[in-house]
Picture 1 (cartoon, rainbow, N blue to C red):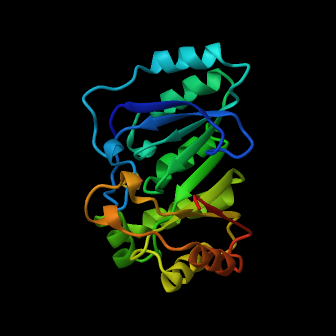
Picture 2 (picture 1 turned 90 degrees about the vertical axis):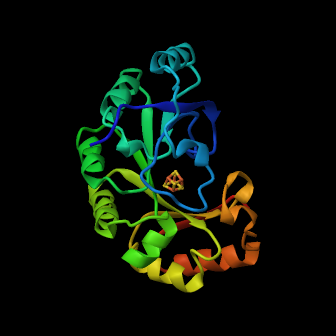
Length: 234
Ligand code: SF4
């Protein structure tokens, strides 16, 4: 069972999080994973205070000439039982909706897609889809069957989606990338995100990111499995 939606952050304009769209971004607090390289650690726990939804809706209403879309990110948005209501309210303002998720709640994802509440999904795939690799990446035991189910739902949904993986040294190397890609074969779009430790807390804070040629090689390898590959954050 999830909890009521808690909005920890609101970005008025982002041109990066949905290519080709003028979007705003709502950041929901709370996450069911504990990735040691998380660069939004302030969103993993649940804050005592949250931003009032009505103030965000008012801002959007006042800027409808400019805004065409909203990205819902976190944290992990699908842990919130009130996500339907939030997206429903955004839909009433005629916004396109993109959902960022770690893929751990396929049933809710399926329901949102079935209700035509999302136009695009970005699913964060962290490691090869086996329990040991995934649990290491997520910092806790993960049922990888849930992640696989989310991928299958997206592949069969007709909804635009992209897969994002962060190239974290020690979590994703060239061999583990290939193992991960075996589970993504035939997918539309992969983003290989450069690791950025600036906002990371804990042991991985000082981890050096891979140099550019390593990510370029990862992208070349990925092209054999996924139709479109991009590197972000170099
Ligand atoms: S799933 Fe995302 S928000 Fe949650 S701990 Fe991992 S990186 Fe952080």
